[in-house]
Amino acid sequence: MLIAPDRLWTGGRLGAGMAVEVARGTVAAVRPLGADTPDLTPHLLIPGPTDLQVNGGGGALFNADPTPATLETIVAAHRRLGTGEILATLITDTPGVMEAAVDAAIAARDMPGLLGLHLEGPHIAAARRGTHAAEHIRPLDARTVAQVTRARRAGLPVMVTLAPEETGAAVLSDLLATGAIVSAGHSAADAATARAAFAAGITCVTHLFNAMAPMTSRAPNLLGAAILSDAHCGLIADGHHVSWEMIRLALSARPRPDRTFLVSDAMATVGGPDRVTLYGQKIRLDRGRLINAEGNLAGAHLDMATALGNLHRMAEVPLATAVAMATDIPRRAMGLAPVDAAPGLPLARLTALDAGLRPVALA
Image (cartoon, rainbow, N blue to C red; front, side, top):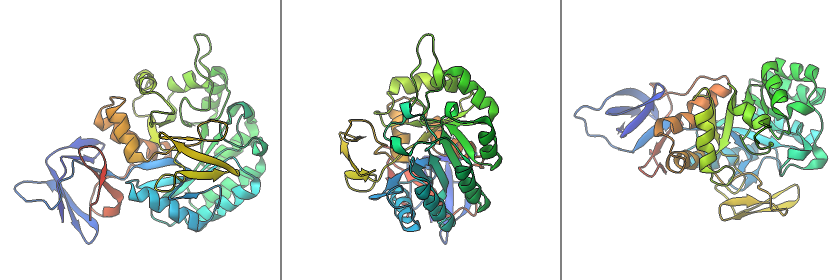
C-alpha cells in the first residue's frame, strides 16, 4: 500500500510531496511520491498523538475499575479516535485503589497503546481539588513513593501530579529519585513557591489554567510562573476549560514554544455513553461539557485529534505547532524520543486526518 498525504509529519516538521510505503502492516519506506499512483491520499499523516492524561473512554473509567480489562477498553476507545498512546490516569482516591491501578498498569505494560501511568493526586490542595474527592486528599508519603517505585521498576513511564505547597522537600526528593515525571497541579501555590518547585525538579504543570489560582496584576501565582518557565505544560483545548484567547496569550508568552502540549483529560464518555459515575456521583455531558452535581467541570469529553483540530482552527495555532503539541512535545515531557514515520514503524502507530482534521481509516 502507498499512502501519499498532502502533509506528512516526519523529523519534527510537516513535509509535502512524500509517500509512505506500507508492507505487511509496517512502514517499509518513506520517499518522494514521484509519478506513482497512491492508494490513499489523506490530508495529513502523523504519528498517533500521545495523550498524557486519560481518565477513561469507551464507557470505562480507570478509578471505577482499575484492572487490565478496563485499560484495554480505554486504550481501544482512544485508538479508534486516532490517539497512538496514553498515560492511564488515576485521580485522587484511596491507597488501595492506587495500588490496584499500579498492579493493573504493570500487568498491561505490553499492551499496544498504553504508554504508562499518571497519578493525578491524591497529594493536592483541597482548595483547588476540582472534582477530586476531598476525603481522599493526603500529603505525599512513602506509601505513594513505594507504588511509583514498583511501576518504574517494571519499566513504566509515570507522571505524578501534586501540589508543591503541600509537599515536603525530603519526600519530593524521594519521588523524583524514582525517575517519575512530577507535575505541579491542583495547586494553590504562589509564584515563589512554584519557582522553587521547578528548581527542585518539578518539570511539568498539569492542565494549565485549570485547578490553580488565576493570575492577577500583583499575584502571578503558579499559572504565571508556569507560563514564564521552561516547564512542560499540559493544556485542554476543548473551548470549555480554557478560552481560545487565553490559549493564544499563554502560548505567545512562553519563552520556549516547544514546552506546551495537548492533553484530553478524557472521561469514560469519550467513545462511550453521555453519563458516567465518579465517586458515586453522576457526571453528565451538557453541551460539550462534563459537569458534576455541583456544576463543576469533571474531566473532558475530548480526544486528541479533536484537540489538535480545535487548537489549529479555534485558537489559530499554526498546523505544524498544533501537530507537535499533540505528538512530539508530550513524549519529550516524559523524557521519551518522538515517534517518527520511518521504516519499521507499525501502521497502527500512524494517524491520518482529513481536511477537517478528523481521523480517517488507513486500512
